[in-house]
Image 1 (cartoon, one colour):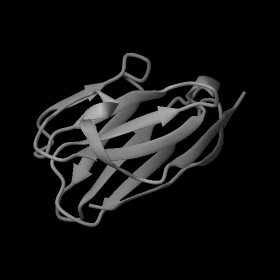
Image 2 (tube, one colour):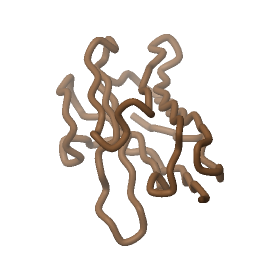
Image 3 (tube, one colour):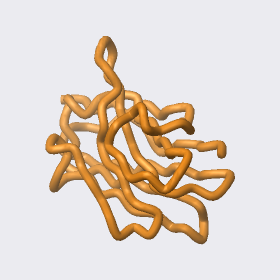
Length: 120
């Protein structure tokens, strides 16, 4: 499975961005993670294969929305009310099986990352 993330950019605080992750093959659950300079890669959001199960990091609840279009093999991350602390490289990822997890080490397929920069 190959994952291609896109949609990052520079936005002012309070603004919005929509990230997309296109998968080349079948995926089960999908997740978004982010990594700021000098920090570890953190969980952002995950969605099950059907879309019926979703999880968010506390820091993004109420502001970010994960969704998927299985017909297009694409997962989205709508990010609203962005804050400077949301600045990071965002990665989409997929596990090998139908496992639903918020732990990065459960994910084996990773996209190349897309930079999100929020200015104050």
